[in-house]
Image 1 (cartoon, one colour):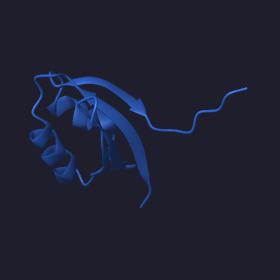
Image 2 (cartoon, helix red, strand yellow):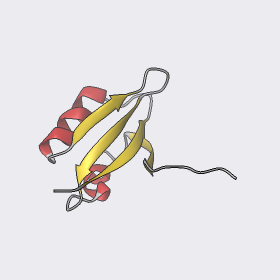
Image 3 (cartoon, helix red, strand yellow):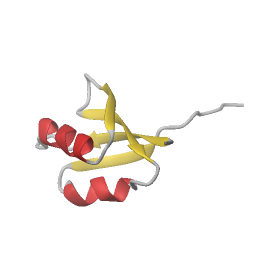
Image 4 (cartoon, helix red, strand yellow):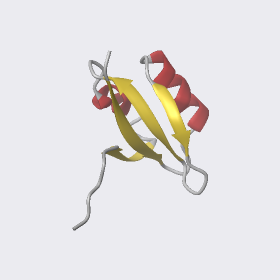
Length: 73
């Protein structure tokens, strides 16, 4: 099974533990937890779209970006 990786930033009031539980219930995993901001790198199975996670935490998520390689010229 292939997975996609996302960087998810939570709002200050968000319950980080509840968010992590939701990721696990959807078959995903937390691969990194940031220290300076309330955020995570999340891996989700390809068949599980990020919108499913957003639906359950629409008031908690500040930003979501696909985690991918960035190139400079």
